[in-house]
Length: 158
Image (tube, rainbow, N blue to C red; front, side, top):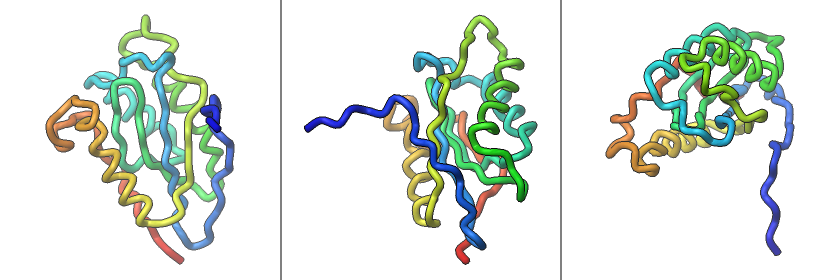
């Protein structure tokens, strides 16, 4: 029996894990999966929006032509929800977008998943770094210019 693909992400709020890290893996796609993200102007625009959206910190990220992946963590004890934060930085990026004719830029929803362990974080990052290679955009992950780390995010167990 074939299970239909989800059209919208399941909403599971980030849970405070006590003395462990609260890291979230996030995927955001462009509207219609248009290939408008992987360029230097947009890269700068996104870095600026993420820096200005102070409730969450962006750690490692990879910007692909039609989607991006990032890891984030609350920057405050009383941080707003991941969804509100994503909506805020999407709005900031849209207002500063270098090519206004490209609007609408973003798909309505984002996919997020709270990580449960340090091994998951390391494994997901290793997989994400290879995304541009798997898509035939570069020969090695180090050659992809639209990736980086805005804030070091570390996994801490209780």
